[in-house]
Image (cartoon, rainbow, N blue to C red; front, side):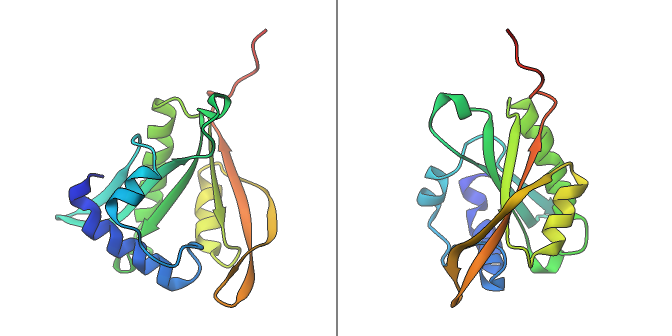
Length: 160
């Protein structure tokens, strides 16, 4: 993903926001704000015949050095592309890219109503860590999120 992709990426992001089940966000930020909040590694778009159908990106969970290999991720699929394997293609590529970049844990928070996303993540080795109840007030109601993580083989036994 590059700044040139942002107009299409932002439209897909906006579609996700409008579903009410993709994010706590209520507006799409500008490129500069979005860029500052995401890692430069593993920014992906899935494109078909010049049309961006989905995107994925990583965010740091902490600036502390001990968490350098842990990232939260986002995946969004355009409405016209849902059910076509775009999410699976993006998540598979994101897992591979993150491991190449040295990340040992990917985590995500998904609304329980987004069963498709929970199922997709489970297929790629993500496990449910827990449910964070009433985490945020969104669309006039309290919302829970399912916290999922995937541990890489890079997270082997501790040395020493």
